[in-house]
Image (cartoon, rainbow, N blue to C red; front, side, top):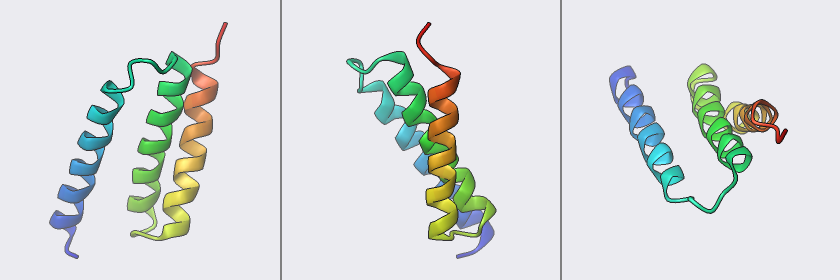
Length: 74
């Protein structure tokens, strides 16, 4: 897959994930932040590791943890 096709597919994935989060209105703010962090982290991990499954999953885990901690309940 060439670079422009990869960028386009990653961008489409981000848009799809972001719009999907809007449908989760019954989720708490922390749940939404965790899901958004996991989605962004997964995409970033995939891009940084050239599509490696381990990089994608690792990025999703790290992003989810960061999103969860950023939006901790007060």
